[in-house]
Image (cartoon, rainbow, N blue to C red; front, top):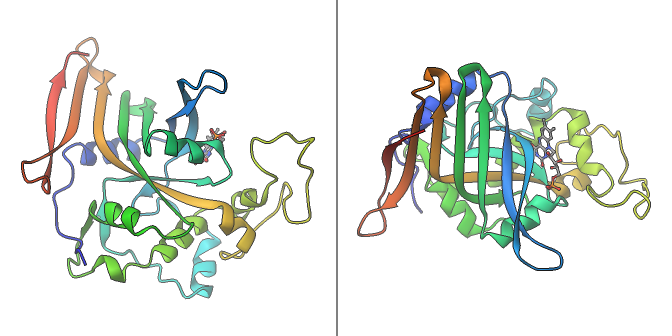
Length: 260
Ligand SMILES: Cc1cc2nc3c(=O)[nH]c(=O)nc-3n(C[C@H](O)[C@H](O)[C@H](O)COP(=O)(O)O)c2cc1C
């Protein structure tokens, strides 16, 4: 089993994380690709999502989550693991999840961090967790994890517990939205049922209906671009791209400074 080794952070990541700390908003625009319903041609789709942390870190645990996690016997101490892979959560019934398949999981996330006057664009491949565990996706994410405890191996990592912890980071009302009637479907065709209705509060972290719909999406960055407007007109624009070395096994980031 591969180990979580002490790799260096990506060259862009400390800066992005610092900028996010200065930013009140942690939301970003997520773009996917879908097919035009009649022509079949590729068309873009974008929507706002909330950054939940960098895998496996959870940015903010809802106050009610601590006792709920304790009740499940889930350890709340930090895992000692960190990465440069942004995480958002979503509902499997939403269109974006299906759209990931159109592009082979490729997405772009865009942050406009107004307080620091910087735009960040993160392009990469997504891995979706919360349904049936897919070993290939677990392996891909694990490759991007750095561990203080280099002895922890992928096989020891509890993926289900990770999903539960992200679920716990939502308020009971937000958890309840995973028991909403089907998102994006006509109200007239899908009336509320006793199971699926608006305004439910979910305290149980293992609520079977909500958890059936809840997903954790990890973006594994392949290209990152920063546009720093704080020094305009001489704005700083940089692009970092993952390049695989000859053997195909070692990855490194290549940095290019661009005209804005
Ligand atoms: C501030 C804000 C944060 C949002 N965060 C998320 C999120 O983290 N995950 C998510 O699936 N939808 C989030 N949404 C809702 C999406 O923007 C979108 O309306 C919904 O996910 C349906 O998108 P889709 O049909 O393209 O899948 C958020 C909306 C707003 C306004």
